[in-house]
Image 1 (tube, rainbow, N blue to C red):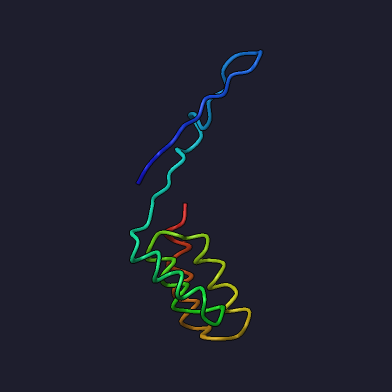
Image 2 (image 1 turned 135 degrees about the horizontal axis):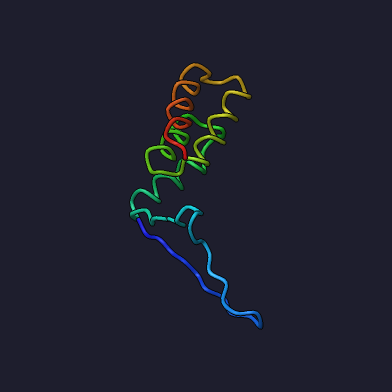
Length: 93
């Protein structure tokens, strides 16, 4: 997990973001094999429970929520999608 902070300078001085009390800006880079597996799932029929789960397992919680919500709206794998969605929502900041 990586964090970043940026400082911009203009005529009034320096502006830094994010800064306390804002949360840190964090991101991570997926290993190549995990990224390929997700890309392969993205190319299949959507929405997809396996894709929603893969997103969740790899920390892409917003994407997991969108995929699982779309699955529920499409009335497919509803019970499984709801269970995974609840876990994702609990893990989301």
